[in-house]
Amino acid sequence: MKKIERFGKWFGIFVLTAMLLAWWSEYSKCGDADVELFPKKTFEVFPLNDSAVGGFSTSEVQVTDTLLTSSVVIHSGKAFTYAGVGFKLKSLKKRLEPLDLTTFDSMEVHVASKRMNSMKLRILTEDPVYTRKGDYATLRVLERDVPSAPYMLMGGAKGRFAVSKFSISEFRVPEWWLSQQGLEKDDGKTYLNSAKFLEIVSGSSTLRGIPDEMEIRYVRFWSDKTQQKKELYMYLIFILIGFVLFLIHVLKTSGRKDAEKLDA
Image 1 (cartoon, rainbow, N blue to C red):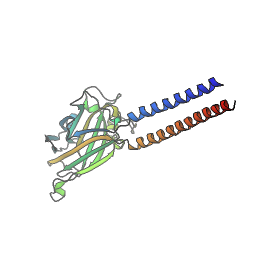
Image 2: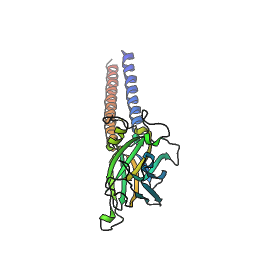
Image 3: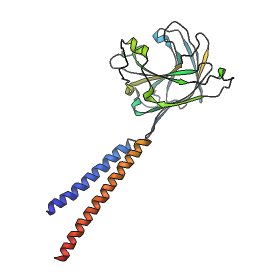
């Protein structure tokens, strides 16, 4: 009987210790993730246009410490035309390619423009089926529109920026890309763990043949683990309650034994 009781105590200690270690392992993974693309200049920036897919639009990029400006002219000739600025998601400071965006759950951008009412954010990822090595035009495209702040349409009030914060899950594969690959509907795949480029390009309201200007003040990927931390703290409370109950049980058992010895 004593062996069984001793085994029960050690087994209880083992279980509680294992639960605490498991809790700590999950908590240590729960730090907030944050990568600032601009103005921190984490990644290489380059001018971007639709020439890679047969278009004729142009883009010139200027970079200062606080502002990234892309002067664009959108030309007709293709069904889906665009120009803007791209970020090559290979860190300038660390060997990291492609970037795993599944680490993050949100994105934030601050943008303004001369005339266009909106801009388009594009994440390009490596698709194991459709992407051919070294062929930019075969990367999987994920898009999301964000509002701009066109100062020409706001009485020349330059300096205003439209701030957008949203979930990365809101990015969608555009219909033109699906059609290009012969897919009838979105297959739901994103391959965000293999992100090659982030692009900020002209929106659908951009006028053809008329120079426009895109201004970017802030871009980042981030992840807020507040809710997950709250849940982990609740689990910790349950573990500690279990530990207290186990300790009370052990003390009561020891107390009964001592009383039995005194009575004997």
